[in-house]
Length: 123
Length: 167
Image (cartoon, rainbow over all chains, first blue to last red; front, side):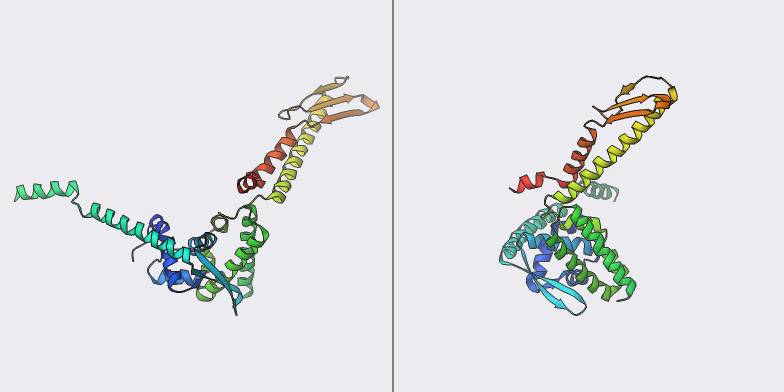
């Protein structure tokens, strides 16, 4: 995947995290690794960790601590029922946005129309 | 993990905790956030090394700022400390200015009591009475500025409006 636009990523991060953690629970760094594997290579830990904290505070994620052999207990997150509702809402918004942007992108740009007519005349 | 990695991890946690405290996060939340960061950094260090793990996290001040958005509270203790330090520093500045003023009076050899206020210490007063061989009398009053400076520092650091917003 090409380098992700940080602003675009920020807008969809909540949706992506809620989806991932609805499928399978995970702790901060494991979530980052999964995101990297899915193509979000530019997504830094410093963006994901606060987002997880925020979603937990909003009640969209639940957390549990699990002992780790390599140090302090790890905090595992999973999506809650309100999180699933929020996910459904943001998916609807996302689909509407994609449809609207798609319409704009598919309509011929004014500059391209002019170029085409010019080419026809020349021919 | 190597000893150096443990030191770097400890130092990162220390700085993170410092900034969380500055942003008004309570002790218990700070401890939880610090432990979570340590757990994540250890996992990342086992995977990519401590240097890369710390790079991924980025600036700890920014991380603390982002992580504390919804849990900031009024930091009374930090505010009181900042207020006291600011007031003490302005008092010290006033003290040095007074000495400088008294030195000027002595050098001028005016021979009678002289009094004035010292800029920018509004409401302050300094009276210098150089009695030659009989001695020197200096009486000072710093006015309200050190108090105002201390109060401003307290308000800026403690952010008391957070307590009002929550209640």
